[in-house]
Each structure stands twice: as structure tokens, then as C-alpha cells.
Image (cartoon, rainbow, N blue to C red; front, side, top):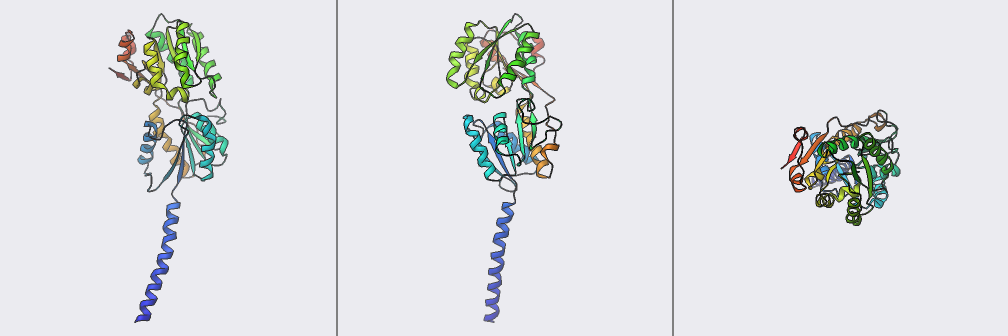
Length: 327
């Protein structure tokens, strides 16, 4: 009897020893994503949308998927190191949520799949070979923000019919800065607008930039998207209102921060859609075979409180086309 008991205990010990590695192995089999952000985005609306997209597809963090988060906190020179960290961890996919992150990820690996959400033209900037056939290890979505600057200038002309000079706030050090400027400058010529570039290279430049802009006597203001400019949207909106300038942006978060108008894709919705690319790749699809997607709907958001503050009346025909109004 004692011998049987001893054998039973020994078998139990063997089974327990076998089960422990199996359990650890199951956990290690969870797909692991690397989430790379240029800005302080770890609790942002965009990240929440991405998590929501994953949840809708059945992925629950900690249960059947793991995510490694890395944020440069607005310090873009940190991105190469952070991308290298994710590659060293051998993540299954890198999710790069803005152009600087995507470029850092691309420079860090040509084998790990990368899903981007870009506001730049990914073909012009060299991220992919073409939208239909990305090639390489990168795919995802682009909000085609740059291509919409002509429409934004048209909206400014409708809101301020007398507009002739438009100040353009830009960061000239951005990777896509030259391309963005050429696009917006060409659109301005078509509309008979003179564009005056006002450069900001760091957060400390904004006050000086607006003094420079005021000296150019602009009738309205446009911003060219850049991570540093996005990070300072509250300051930018406040300075625009103080200068009593009708300003238009590419993202509704600027309007929610006090900006006058925005026109562009719903970036939160695009972040939710990033999860679909992650799902396809985890199920065996190759990034090279997944066309880069573009949005088909663009939202016009207007802040009537800001319009009143700067003494501007939004024309009824423009207001009627708004997809969202802050009163």
C-alpha cells in the first residue's frame, strides 16, 4: 500500500513538472505586438481606439495577446532606440502610429511586419513602393492629410472671403516638410492665395512664430501636421484665437482644444481599423500583399465658441456641411 502511494505521489510530481512548462509555453505563444508612438500616446484616444478594434476582433490584452508599449514622449531622436528594443524582443508585429515611428521601425527591421497609421504620403516618403502593392514588410493606413490642404484652403476662403494672405505654421525639420510645403503652396496658387511660411522647430518657438506671423498681416492660418505641432495643439489654438485669426487644422482634436475648424479623416477611426491589419497578419497574410488603405470619409468640425471669440460669423452654407459643431 505504501509502495502504491509512493508511486502515485511520484506520478503526480512528474505530471505537475510537465504541466508547468506547458502552461508557460502556452503563455509564450500569445501573439506579442510592439506599439511604437512618437508622442505621449500611451493613454491617448488613439490607443483606446486601437484596443477597442482588437477587442472587437476577439483579442484581449493579457488573455490572448500581449502588447509592448514604447513612447518617445515627443523626443523623436529616441525612436530609433525604442524601435530597436521592440525588434530585440522579437515581437510578432510592430504597430507604428505616425510617420516618424514608421520610419524608425522600418530602419530597425526588414523582416518583422509593420502596421502603420500615417498622415504623410507613404509612397513619397519611401515607406512603401505603392499603395496597391506595398512590397517589403510595411502596410497599414494613410489619412492623406497632405493631399487635403487644398480643400482646407478652400474652406478658409469660404469663411473669410476677403482672405488673400495665409500664414502657414510648419516644422521645417520634419521628414515630409518639403513635400507638404510644395503641395500646399501649389494649392494656394490655384486659389489666388499668398502663403507665408512661419517656422516652429521647438515648443519655445510658438510665441515668436505668432509675432512673426502677425507682421506678415495674414487673413487666416493653416498648420502643417507634425508630432511637435500636434503635441502643442492647445497652445496653438490659444495663440490663434488671441491673434483673432481664422485657423484650420487637419484633426478634430485641435478644434476640441479651442481651434476654429478642422477638415480631415477621423484619425480615431483609423486607429481602430489598424487592428484589422494586425488580425490579418496574425492569421498569415503578408504585409507586401495587403494594400495600404485610404479613408473615404472626411469630417468638417467647427467650433462656434471660437468663431464668436474672434468675431467671425460662419456662413450658413459652411455650417450646414459640418459633421460636428462645438457650441
